[in-house]
Image (cartoon, rainbow, N blue to C red; front, top):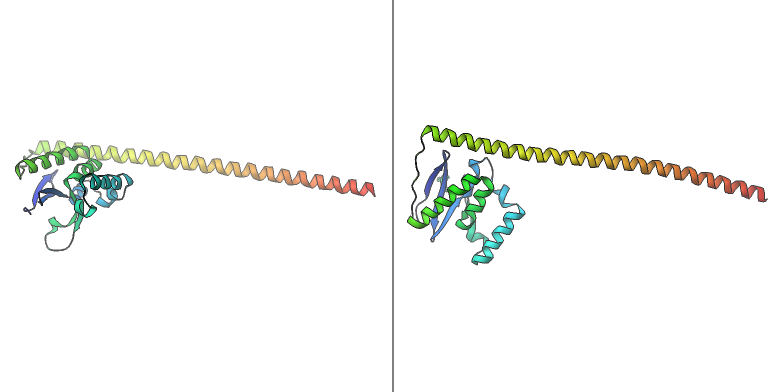
Length: 194
């Protein structure tokens, strides 16, 4: 096992570690950068299918490609850790630019056993932060538009169902009235027959 390697992405620390020749990343740190939790992704159907397929193709168990580290004083080492085969897929679900950055770090670690972090000047850092915030805002807006549309569709369906119920009640009342009229006519016929 090699020492923990910490890299900065957008002023946030992302931990990588090589364990038994395999690169692992701290998914908790990765998700935190984008104000998300790993379980938000781990519980999705697509993610579960992806993990299962990785396990089948590489002959691994889930515990071999994703595990948790708890306790201790080393806060950097805690959280959910994921195998190199999952890192890019996980990062892709967080942010496209972040996914590409992770891919470069993994390649660097695999080639050299280490990676270098290029210092950004304050202007570059501000520009990339603005781009990241803009992407996050657009993503949030898109989710909001989808949720609004879903609520709007539900409301339309509810109103349509209420209208159909009123129409059915009206038909039922009308049918009952017609039945009563038929019963009354039958009673009159029976009365005349006597």
